[in-house]
Image 1 (cartoon, rainbow, N blue to C red):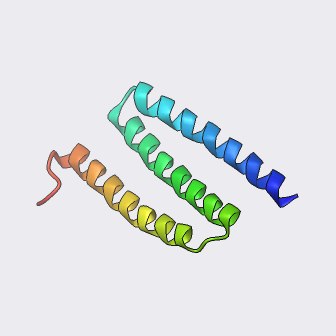
Image 2 (image 1 turned 135 degrees about the vertical axis):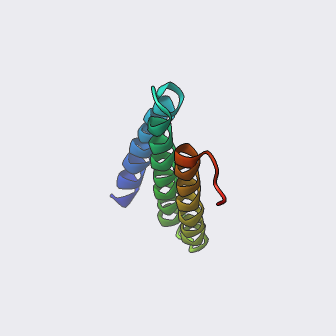
Image 3 (image 1 turned 30 degrees about the horizontal axis):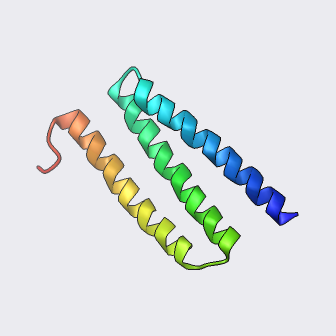
Length: 89
């Protein structure tokens, strides 16, 4: 039963990533693209955690944590660049 739930979750995350990619490419404003990229990072983190559950390995959870930290810093940097035109003050 858990295998079916994992396959369904993989399918849902694949659809979510495809829709995020569409918004990233077609977004009318830069803000929409930044939000789409941040949502894409969150969905990728969920995908990595799902791989960890499917393969019963702890290394995937550590990779998801690292990606979460890098994704947060990247989103903050994009937003600062959009508002001020410079990342480092």
